[in-house]
Image (cartoon, rainbow, N blue to C red; front, side, top):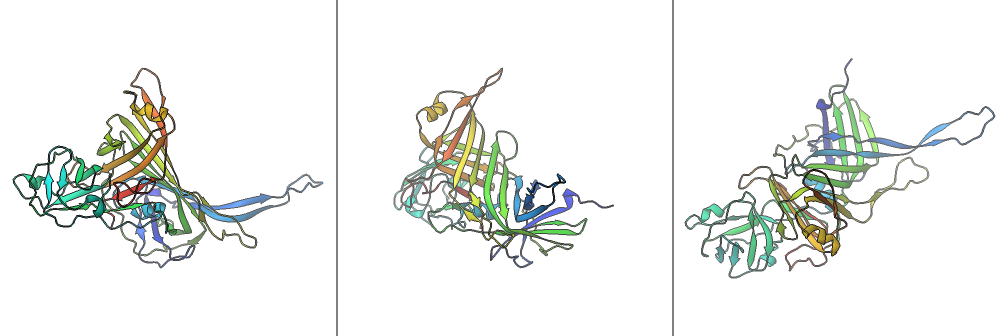
Length: 405
């Protein structure tokens, strides 16, 4: 007897052009996973009749839906489609200076200074990872093609660090240089939110079974960044229906991505613009608050709608001084920037998350014969101070992926 093996199960997806309607069978994408437990669910009803035989006479199925989660280990390029879905906006064109000859490089802050033009007008923001090219004098080419995280920004001054730990090499202005955001970014916009839905297939080749889940919308995305171990991702879906077959629906899907996995040990964390080395973990959830209401005469939901965004999480840190505790005591607002790379290479692929306005809701400390750790839950809020002419976005969260196209 052949039974289904998890190692032979394939997870495939494709965006729908109409909610709940299967898209064409070509052009799907295989998705890397740790688990996927999407399945068909049904409401059920039991008879409440009181009978002389003291037994239940009926049990019925009601409205059906698709529910479940997909979990994986975070890697660049793998989940860009779902980052777009959870933010409700396509990845945006990368900001760039174009070729300019007015930039001085310095080994200390600010590292890159321009004598004309504006980084803000060009579209750069704090938390962006950029790459410079074109430095030519002396050892200045060492500044080229390296991931540089912007930690502070004005129209003329760009301050930050190379993610691999290298120092910026000083160089006088005159070289024709270009600065460009690596990959692309998406964020929760003010208007025009996308409402994408997906057809997601579980194909079990060893038992010749296909389950195609239709009308799947991403309701919640969670990311965990432990101090040691892989960064992980979990996505909760709500969908409309499932169809079954004995052969695959999506033919010739694109192979899984093969980018490296991300871990917090390869990257940097900033809270309130200051690099933090005592953090022991960071996690957050983006919840779109999806809901669906039944209608008479059909066992399918007529629609799935989104409510307000709720972005919450927590970070843990060694109890070193009053800094983090005081964020709670004083109801202070800070930003959180997390940049994770797949290696220590100068231009390693990466994913960054920026929460530009966060309030901490507690600062409890554990106890024991160990280094004491604080747990600081937080809520991310709309950054009302952000905008096109300042150094931060007007949003709750932004995500940058170096392999987004």
